[in-house]
Length: 148
Image (cartoon, rainbow, N blue to C red; front, side, top):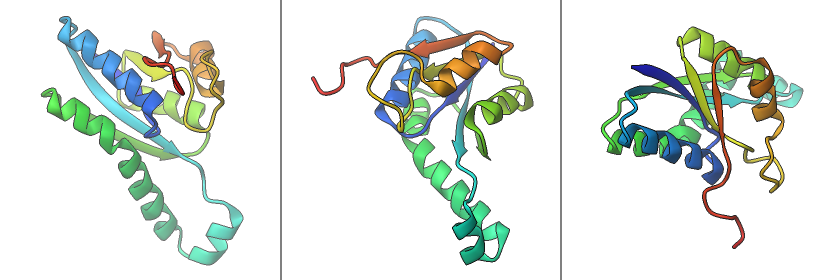
């Protein structure tokens, strides 16, 4: 059984990657999934206002879980019991770390995230993983043309 990392930012594009992973599982791929989200590190203002790093961490983790909820629901509805991975920092670096920490053997991700343009070529995070990842990376373009 292969273990697959599914990075998600809560966007419809990242759900396209989850749908693709579920399609592969429906076609017979025996897989387990790790749904991952990487939050931006706290900025100086947030650190000054919060006073307590644990507060910032809790807020960041809550935001990550909220963004992962749609992907988790899709996987659970299909009978899967995904693991969850949350981190803060540079997305490409943290996803590579999650990949290693969870012993994933593949990555399925969207071509671009929520904050990137509408182009369907690989965005900066996807391209970084394609360049540096020690396991196969499947980059999923949008299933339905956005804005159509």
